[in-house]
Amino acid sequence: LERVILPGYNESLKIHNEILFPNFCNELLKIKDLKLRPDDTFVIGYPKSGTTWTEEIVWLIQNDLDFEKCSRQFHFERVPFLEKEPLNKIDLLPAPRVFKSHLTLDYLPDKIEQFCKIIYVMRNPKDMLVSYFNFMKSIKGIDYNGTLENIIEDFSQDKIVYGNWCDHVNQFYSNSNILFITYEDLLEKSFEIVKKIVEFLGKSYTDKEIERLIEVTSFKNMKSTSTQLSRFHSDETFKRIDFSLFFRKGEIGNWVSHFNDQMSSKVDDLIKHKINPNIEIRYLP
Ligand code: A3P
Image (cartoon, rainbow, N blue to C red; front, side, top):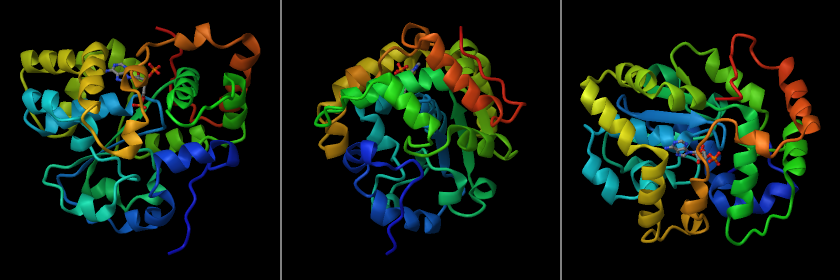
């Protein structure tokens, strides 16, 4: 099988990629032939954009608000990470499947958005980069010694795994079959956005149920549940992640404490001419 490399794959992030995504090079091509089911749902976003949070909301919506199972079974056992899990395992999973992915449509089965529901989550790139930087530093066994400036430089050269951020966002934004949400809206207008996801998935829940769903998927709650449940999880990849650090801040605008003016204008300049002008990016609460 041909070796398929993701956009953004580069030497400085190589260890990161190989530890986190052991199946990348041999399984990536096969994802195109994934046997889709009409009740499959995909949650997609550029890394560190709030994908895990969105997945938890979507998983609950798709599973009749099974809060009990959600508190008992580790998130990534319920929501397979598409590009990490072996496809033969994925084929056997019971319906309804909810997948996590950071892949663009180019890597996914053709016309996937016509067969299955896709929810895309975008986060402002400055908060995303701070989150990415801290995530890199927190992975056990990597000893990442780069700086946030290094990460921003990688970002400017499309060397962050999954490639150019604007291309990623633009592709999903311009596809009308896909529900496009933002991290910032999900945090500040939780009820409205969750209701939108519920409707998009063709479900119906009472306002009270939606409020409970928001409470269960709060930053504080997900942090404590995932930190506890991850201790019993044997997967090598997830053992390298400290979930008490993975759920780090969960805020809008944390970048302000980490960026100087130069870093901020560098990101602004990169995005200005490339991002679809209809997309509104909110950097502050
Ligand atoms: P921070 O590092 O800024 O805290 P992803 O899941 O795509 O890797 O994104 C991770 C980011 O989402 C982290 O951001 C994490 O804290 C934040 N996050 C995870 N769960 C959240 C929740 N329930 N509410 C708000 N933010 C959440």
